[in-house]
Amino acid sequence: MMDSTSKPTVVSAPGKVLIAGGYLVLDPAYSGIVISTSSRFYTVIKPLTPPTANTIRVRSPQFRDSTWTYSLSFDPLVKVHPDVNNTSKNKFVHLALQHTIALACEAHQDTTKQLLTGGLDIAIVGDNDFYSQRAQLDALNLPITLESLASIPPFSVQGVTLSEVRKTGLGSSAALITSLVSGLLVHLGTISTTALQEDGGSERKLAHNLAQFIHCLAQGKVGSGFDVAAAVFGSHLYTRFDPRVIAPLMGDNSVQPNSLLQIVSAENTSWDYHIRPFQLPPLTRIMLADVNAGSDTPSFIGKVQEWRKAYPERAYAIWTAIDKQNQSLASTLLRISDYHSQNPLKYASIVKFISTLQPIQWTADPSLPDFETQVAAEFHAAHRTMMEIRRCMKEMGELSGAAIEPPEQTKLLDKCCAQAGVIGGGVPGAGGYDAVWVLMCEPEQCRPDQWPRERVEHLWSHYTELKVTPLSAVESMAKGARLENIDEIVGLKNAMQ
Ligand SMILES: Nc1ncnc2c1ncn2[C@@H]1O[C@H](COP(=O)(O)OP(=O)(O)OP(=O)(O)O)[C@@H](O)[C@H]1O
Ligand SMILES: C[C@@](O)(CCOP(=O)(O)O)CC(=O)O
Image 1 (cartoon, rainbow, N blue to C red):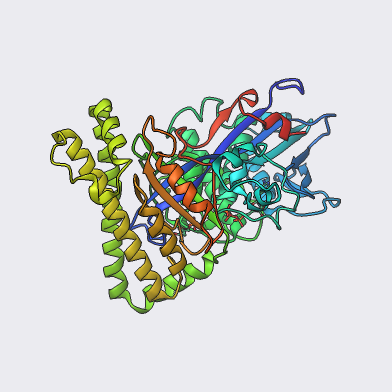
Image 2 (spheres, rainbow, N blue to C red; image 1 turned 45 degrees about the vertical axis):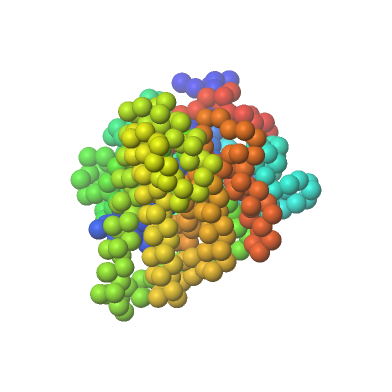
């Protein structure tokens, strides 16, 4: 058994960007493209010192007033009680503890109780990208660049409470729930320490189903769940689950009878979500920006749903058109990756070539060899499809009254997409004013000032109509939630103090 000198259990889970399929993905007839980010949440679990029976202390050291203590009782069912001296509440953390420990007890009552007798000490931190760093860069008088972001210490202290912090839309709550739930499942032995090595094994699915249910309960609504799916499985093409699978668990009573395991089990065929493998093509890079202007996602969803109900035929036609483009984008990007597998050298040379040109010029050179011409044509097709998706999403916004791609964002995105080497971009997820994503070529080498990312960064840092702050995230190459070694995560040990 683990003692206080052993290494802690550390599980991380990535953030997300829905680059195609916003709104449509709420309906199981459609799917979306979700990219998981290199920016992650980390949950660190170790025995409490000094040992304190059936006590769990959770800390979020990046925030003020963010330590929560809980006690456990087991009779007749597991119950997690917030300490009366806690100065704030954290529903997400409380529900994650309640239901994960209940599940662990259902699976192995005696060992779970034994592992909890000395208590647990849990710390949760998120990469800086999850919270807006604009104020910090301005206060330090630093230019608004990726280099400046890299100079801020990892897991930096935000100086505010969790309810005051400005989030960037990467899905902090889904990444937090996934890392906490999976970390507890590993620590309590409900899933094995190798469970998170396999891409889609049954233990990873169990962690997904449990995290998905807890996230819905904490949010008080059932969304499409693409954010939790990305946190657990990494980038993929997502088709949602039927919410009826968790309906029996969604009541007010936070203590569940012994049926949780059966419902969240990977063997429960009522979980009908589909996760199809996806990754952005090699030698491309996604860049994300936090735009300093808020949007209200739930009100956008309400408007789009009302419009869809009021004009079913028109909505069906538009959704069918968007879906066709979304599917085409996914298959084009996957085909581009295939070209890389066929001939990495030629692929690298054509990426380098198009990275200095605007899309309209990518297929204009008749002297290019066949292979290179084909790859350039696929990149151009991806560009056209991204532009068409933006046009359709904007139209849906105008028809429904939700500012999905408002004029200010159109102007910004058009400028980004006019840069040499930029494939396309858009407003992530539900859209609105608060973020943009841009996909660009990232050749192996470039002369200084020739990287597409530098052009985009320059544009953003000199943009005056909106405050546009880059995030440091790229696509996560590690598939979703993973077990970490605390010594290998820069700054993590420090952040625990
Ligand atoms: N570092 C953290 N430690 C503990 N709890 C956190 C932390 N970060 C976020 N949370 C929890 O997640 C909640 C925020 O969830 P909410 O659903 O409002 O955000 P979100 O939609 O995931 O935001 P975004 O996508 O912008 O990151 C907080 O109120 C808190 O309970
Ligand atoms: C509008 C919607 O499809 C996407 C919302 O995405 P985001 O939180 O804006 O990244 C809602 C959902 O899928 O739950």
